[in-house]
Length: 410
Image 1 (cartoon, rainbow, N blue to C red):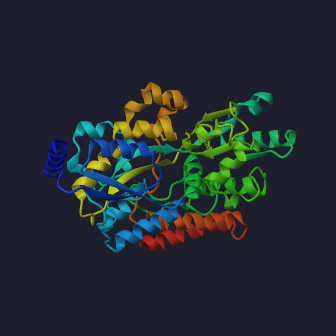
Image 2 (image 1 turned 90 degrees about the vertical axis):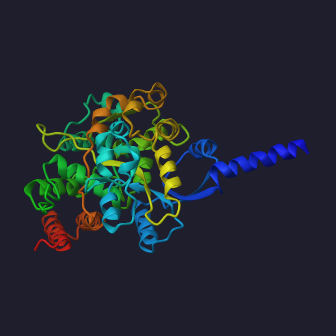
């Protein structure tokens, strides 16, 4: 009886302190379950119900848009790509978060990820990981043939062709060139490196330039003229691009840092210990390398009935403990500056210390409430060029026309 009384007292205390337990539905991209367990242990009044999203980023966006458009309160918070803040905030679908952070808290984050969730002077999400496109390369093959890591895309093509002749079955570069958001990321890195851009700082469409045309021609030539890309590259998602490289069948790979752990895992990689990582090539030897800013943040639905609890979890999800777990266990690149000198993180991903400048200055995709539509235009027209249905010149003119029509700039 005494034990029962103590138990009932405990239940009363918990109920009195926390009230009824809140269940949050969290639509997630990728997470280590220990993060949830740690949060729930520290917050017994909140339970996190995980809802897995599709693997394809375009499908993720469609799912979240459908739920938010319906003002469905069953989704409390969700993982968001770096390009979604203008889309969702302009529609009034997500909760503003600035008032929940001090200046000191905000200064702990890298500027790129924080900028990506800032729109109209308000913060709409909390970055829990960042990303930047990087170049993976076969150290052993470059050493074997006395070739340096290429500084320009032209050098990458020439090195690829040189090694392909001497290594039967080898291809030069693997990447994510299927018609999805990954193609936009791959495309923009090459466009920027040649000096091109989609929109200027005032939102004016400036994509139709000789610089952008030069970048498109380079990509088209990689497939049709130089033939350094794997067969079927126009259908390659991130996993397909990695598979070719991990199998030892390509010299170079454009990928995100999350591929590093698997590249060193002998159960999925034949090139363990033979992989190097570097900045992506430049378009011009006198220019600079560009990496597309990637990463994920947590956003809170404006229609959640448990916003206070959702914001509490979102801050934890993007906090120091959770980001360290993600970095060590999932190879997620931290959005918090301090973790770039954390010894546990560096033991798992030693390259992030040297690549810190690239992550710090990763370049954002065009900021626009219509970004999803702009990206789809870029993907579609680039694919039309890849399969030979349009010349680079025609694809570029059609990109310009459609984006101008979309933004009402005719």
